Image 1 (spheres, one colour):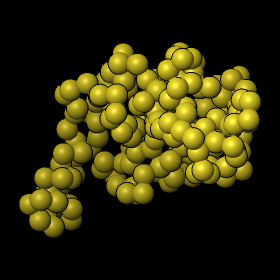
Image 2 (tube, one colour):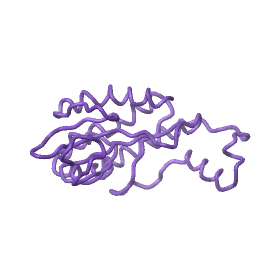
Image 3 (cartoon, helix red, strand yellow):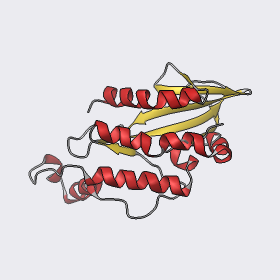
Amino acid sequence: MKSTEVYRLLRLGLSPVLKSLGFKREKSFLSWARRRGDKYTVLWCQISRDGWDEYVGSQFTLEFQRSVDSAVGSRSTQRKRIAKLLSDTQREDVRLVQNNIVATLRHPPANYFKLSVSPEVTQWYLAKFEQDTTPYPHNHDIWLRYAKTEHVEQSWHCRPASALRARPAAARSAAATDGRCGRHARVA
């Protein structure tokens, strides 16, 4: 799946929710910003630099910042990925959806090149097909996995969009620090 297609799906899914919350689409990256007082709350999506693998797919995250400028990555007073904006229940919802996605991944054939580099690389690669068995802690760096269109849609629906609406106080505090994708985490 090309990153342009993933960004398109995320834009289509997140734009209506963010617009209803007063965010405006920004020019850089896939980002939105909303001014509150003398600062902006900025949200953007990032696709992993690891690239695409035909078996494990890839992953993306959402990040938030509070800053004087609406530009992604500008000097901020707070910066957080989505996990820090989610409640325990929301993080657990994300984990369960991610496990469902991992369960649908096609395993590579035994002669797949990544399985013959070294025992360590094989172990690292095959771990990508394992489900997370423990709840994500508050500081877990959640990356939302996908290998097909439905996975992208499931991931941002799963709890990222809901997190944007659900937790006003926690999100305000979090939007001032660092975050990733989850169900509508209300943002300051």
